[in-house]
Length: 152
Image (cartoon, rainbow, N blue to C red; front, side, top):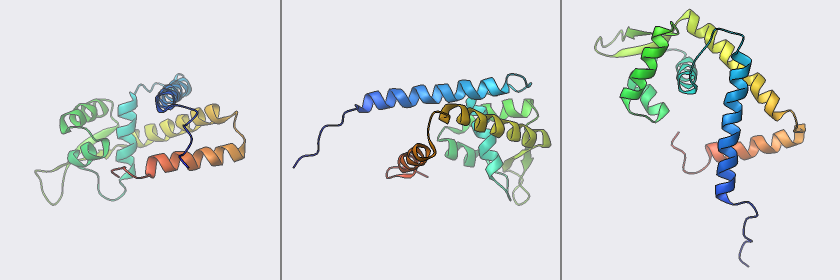
């Protein structure tokens, strides 16, 4: 027996996901308005990625790979974050030709604020859902993010 046609088209779901992402960015921006923090979503993502490296700061190539962009794009993002005092370039102790990117104290503080704003934005958006609906949504999103075809 053939499977029934989906009631919601993939293009409709794609549009809803895009709209939800935009709404999340707007909500996060709203929670940051009273602060003097003006990072683009790409800069915020790079800051979060750098923050995930605990022992050894990442190389530019590591960041490009994680962001799935060309190294030049990372250079532009790092330049902006460095100008804001959130990260600094440091030479690798084993190979002085390699440059690593590490968070500054200001960057760690900014990252905490960004995480808090992101959490508050998520709470705003998820407020209409019951705990059970949140569990289901979390499972569905995990399947999509971590499912087949992912590169990470």
